[in-house]
Length: 68
Image (cartoon, rainbow, N blue to C red; front, top):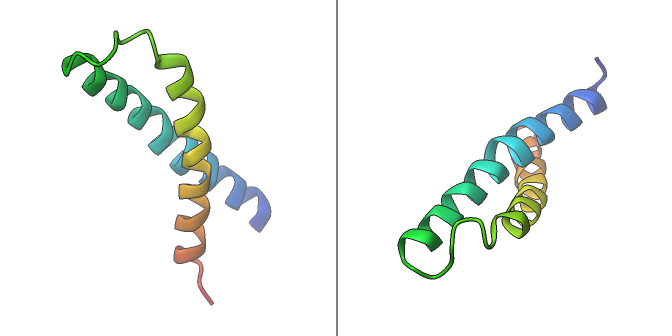
């Protein structure tokens, strides 16, 4: 694997999938428990927004881990 493939894999696994999806589910659970929204009412938008944000999170993690 090249460095770019490793970087893409890291960002995808640690950022979008490892942070974005669990955070989206956790956020919707909190919204449901506080009575703001039904759990399934906003899950689609959360599952789009949080993984996209997770890409940025993974990118910044990669850069901080591989500073030269």
